Amino acid sequence: MAYATRFLIGGELVSPQSKEFLDVEDPATGRVIAQLPAGGAADIDRAVAAARDCFERGAWTGKLPQERAAAMWKLADLLAENLDELAQLDVIDNGMPMMFAKATVNSCIGTLRYYAGYCNKIYGVTADISGGGREMHAYTRQEPVGVVGAITPWNAPLAVVVNKIAPAIAAGCTVVVKPAEQTSLSALRFAELVAQTDLPAGLINIVTGYGVSAGAALANHSDVDKLTFTGSTGVGKSLVQAAAGNLKRLTLELGGKSPVFVFDDADLEQAIPACAMAIFANSGQVCFAGSRLYVQRKRFDEVVERVGKAAKAMRLGSGIDAQTQLGPVVSGKQMERVMEYIESGLSEGAELVVGGRRHGDEGYFVEPTVFANPSSKDLKIVREEIFGPVLVAMPFEDMDEVATLANSTPFGLGSGVFTSNVSTAHKAARRIRAGNVWINCYGVLDKAMPFGGYKQSGWGRENGGAGLEAFLETKSVYTML
Ligand code: NAD
Image 1 (tube, protein in one colour):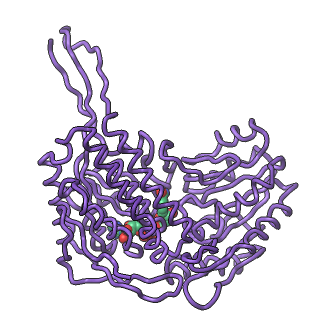
Image 2: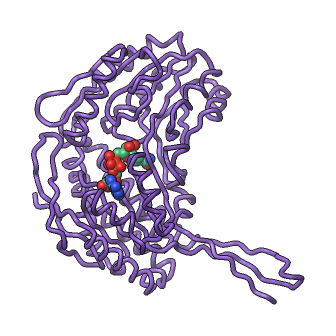
Image 3: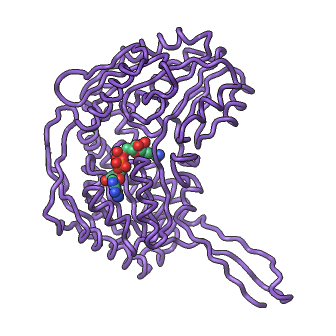
């Protein structure tokens, strides 16, 4: 298979200025299957200059709102025509099962169409004010923040790239994207598709490369007005420093250690598969993965046993195989990291219910793993984000404990509540400090609903109107009548 290997800068597919490369590994085999250019500061400079030029010329904002919407719809149609290939690239690169990959590429199409609808729905307000005793006409305008730098992670490669681009361009911004070095194949193919459209040159620019070079160059760039980042909490904190240079606006979607509560009265037919998929979907490499399972004491043993059975029954394999439910983790480094957490669970005192080992000796597969009854809530597997298929189950007594248990973490991204009592469900939802609470389901996402985290899970929200506002500035206009 031939892969796209050029950057998209100023509407052209260009060769990098940097002479560095990054290896593309298939995590199902561990073999290097391609090399992609690793851009450096010079490539980022070029991309930011192209984005700035497009913005200042008004090449995009000068178009009518319905023209911009139509162009976004056309790009969505192009993704739909190439859905299978884009999904295949994410499978090869990330290891995710094909069905999951197709769903994420489909979500890209939905995102572009959803935000296309906002192009002619950006409103200010009018206000009656007392301007020094004179009659005034005052109103606000919502204007694009300018040039956006977008830095994305490897766990949902194309989906996160498009999730940044769509609201940014709907708001009238221009964008430079730096995808994750582990999974850049679909972003570069997407770049080729963008180059086929008549979107203005410089509206969308894509440069692949390492975080410490290309990523840092983008984050520190003094001509970038806004940074939008999805990734680890550690790197997110370093971007706060980087943004300080020119006080660029910053949205952060970071990590989590999300709790799921199963009350005595829950419908277990519904709760068991949902609790299993909350952690095992995409091999646990989901920022809102439900990695802490709290079960009300009376049904603790039953739930743990049944979630363990569900884990054991999962079919591991290459994401290309249509039967696969669980692919490998993304890289050898990630597999080692996950295995270290499993070792720590074993040595620090947690009961291993199922899993706990590598699967096979080719590629980076980790068995879906369930721990129960950790000796203390301070164990690393209870506190830290593992980002792998590892669940830790603990009993709880009653509603009074929900807030303490749920919120005993620096994170606040996802959470789940299973109960057949509507009052229990909403009481719990109020007590949990997290950006998302799923009741009798887990991980449902919709473009219309804001997504983001409390505490160290991030700053700001994506999706919905809030996702658009993150790319807008408010201007107040005063007229003396
Ligand atoms: P990461 O933070 O290591 O990398 C993310 C991106 O940042 C990559 O493109 C990387 O090249 C870049 N980067 C790394 N160092 C940089 C630096 N110094 N300056 C600028 N850019 C830099 O994260 P990851 O390992 O790719 O992704 C996993 C993490 O992402 C997990 O913690 C997960 O929870 C989080 N995540 C969060 C969400 C969300 O929406 N909240 C979604 C997906 C993943």
